[in-house]
Length: 469
Image (cartoon, rainbow, N blue to C red; front, side):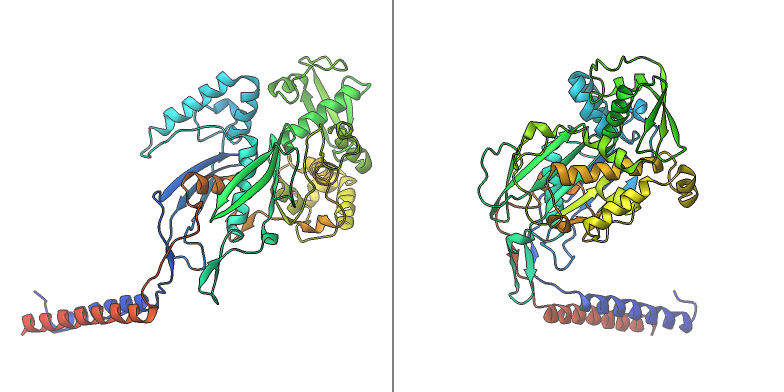
């Protein structure tokens, strides 16, 4: 029972205001053509990369406009780790996937044991765990390609004029360039017919067939490249204790244990020039831009391709690059640091990298005080490696360079293989053309909802007045 009429009146007014607000919100809701929801509404992908570890949760959201009806909301949270030695807990190591990929090359049974521990731990959480496995490099490249084109509406796009979903022109299909810690991938849709094509991924998406060239180069990821570069410099040096490093800044030095090369199959290979032991070697920076580029190029076997234009390096076949490309992951992070992600011409890119490589360690450390001191001296080598990979290996040139876009997001979502994998796993991109259900006309729907709520509000107010009287 109310204490007085004032409280009763306030309650009535509050209820009417709340119901009016609800009616107003609902009246603004636009009910357009929506896709039939998939059978799986939620999914999770754990990506333990070389620089950070992220957890991605994908959720169905049928209210988002101007989309294919299959909408993903991404929750990405970095998980700080302790290193590879703590891989017994699957949520901590920041380079778990890179470690597993390399471990599989060296000892497949050990990799299986790590996956078993991952499965054991995941089953302790309240999720419907379906299993864990290591993606192949080609799968990673293909799923990255799906992610890029899905986020950029390259597969299908809603046309307001035609009031239907249409397929964009084939020229809008983007290629994907991914650079990780252990490997790098290139994926794109070649022009015309392709011969001698073994590195192929075939997809049927929204009623159309896509034949994608994709190849993954293990041991050509950024971290493994740096290890291979250090080992090559040490092997060629006449000194056994102090070795000049052309890519490191002047007055910068780094101690390296030769035993560390045995931890990866990329550097754990016999070399008659070098006897692997436990001794330490000091790498001394020289800030030599041209020397750095020359040292990086030695990591590639270009002679295996001869004069063939359909070959990258190590005798690997690749059709000529065509179309536009999105370069993400380490491609983006390195060029973002150097302020080279705004579509600068190739000549400007070369000049910027060359100038950066000549700066001293004192200059760099004072200019970038917040940058990780372990990462800062490696940008010169990374940038020269990216140039060599894109120009000499993948054979981009002065003209096609302008077709490469260095970015980490598309459609306000992070680019990577995880979304593409989730879409493929849950069939959220169907093989057939989209099926659409026509909703009520928005104005009629809003009017009906408003009428029902207001009628209910007036009835409730009348009932309370009768009880009060």
